Image (cartoon, rainbow, N blue to C red; front, side):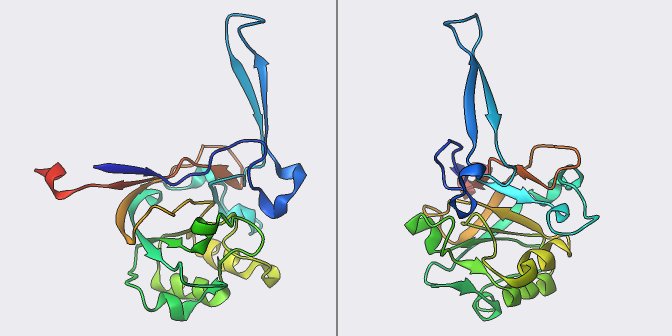
Amino acid sequence: MKIYDISMSIYHDMPVYKGKTSKKPIVKIINDYSSGSVYETKLEMNLHTGTHIDSPLHMLQGGEAINKLALEKVVTKCKVLDFSNIEHQINKEHLAQKDIAQGDFILLKTKNSFLDILEGEFVYLDKTGAEYLRNKEVIGVGIDALGIERNQPDHETHKILLGSHIIVLEGLRLKEIEEDEYLLVAPPICIDGAEASPVRALLIKIFMEDSC
């Protein structure tokens, strides 16, 4: 068995959406051994920081909050699809060349992972790609950027996916991951009424000898 951590580390100067200073996490030591007998840290950050899941509430008024997410959707088999040759956006024509079936959780590996492009001119999933995945009835889609779309009018990609209760997992690191099938483990923190949550996303590859 091999476990791959496909998550971003959380630190103050990490990449954040559009590089906004206001979105940088603040990690503050509030107690250490010079002042007491325990070590404690306070973390302040936007829930869309780093590797995270968006719930329907993020884009849809009245949509479900993150604490309503069914865990079997984020502890599941998944397929990593390699689109590292794509320059700008992934569309339905690109996706149609891959083996995608009903109930799949799809992770989109792009040049973002190789060039450390997490915001700015990153590769994203366009409206036609989102519609294709909706019609295929996938249960989730993840990408190696801080957003699954970029500068699209009215957030079409998000709304198509979240409106169909398709999990949106953003901020993945997939450089070392080969196109293949894996077990995905990416449960969010259970935050009542929130529209998103950070996750520690893992891929697990079980080899044949492990099951003997």
